[in-house]
Length: 357
Image 1: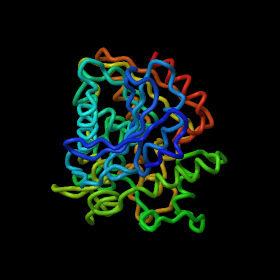
Image 2: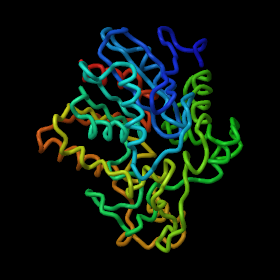
Image 3: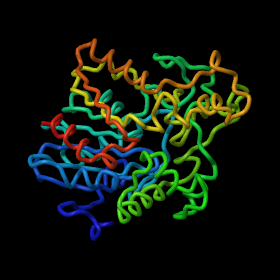
């Protein structure tokens, strides 16, 4: 564990749950109100370290590593359950720690972690005190859908899961810390996780890069496998049994629109960077966006395969949530990319801590 290099007041531990040996960082008041921080894809709990260290008095922060990331155990991810394997891992963790029984949990999910927070709330609404979504993936998953209601473009969800650059995967696997390629993990992080010219302090950048490089590479984890499709862009999510993160985040398996109908319905804070390149209505991980920019051949055009309106889809589900008695607030941070908690920490913490209060 990274005990020595952790920020003051934080501890690191491994919890052996019935599902998974889970590594987590813990900070704040031992018996404080529990706040669970859920990291995104190709990252780890270390992205929440500074937020944990700044938690106001009265809260207990918990930031676990998801399966196949950081220092947690690696097990195959059953993609045919969407994000439920992650959600069930977290429930096992909280149950093992004796949390979530008498006292409700505040959930804070970033990117894919936002989708996991939604899935957890769908499954355990009565145990959730509030939900904070930081630049969350859209409720219909990544890629392969059109319009505000997430209508699939093809029957086989071709393009679902978004575009993965194979060289990036190889460089992750090989532990590449260089800047020699546009898809070196360090460059991908600095160009897409954050809005340039933002750079984390040198020591933090190395910690964040190590978090990316902790990603377990393979068919059962990241990115997973993708069969050939007869439909553009000629790759589709796997059929059951399906494994891996790209399949889990495809619209074939990631279905979070039921969030709109949960009861009880905790308050939601949706906080996002206005210049997010990953989750946006013009996202370069969306095949159609690349087709529209003439960066991918044979794009069938906007009539057939328009870019996915990711922000619009999230807003539509949250508006539906509100219409059915829930409450949400959307906070947009100007000049900020995919990681408000890193790029604009003071603004982010003020919004989060006021919301939790």
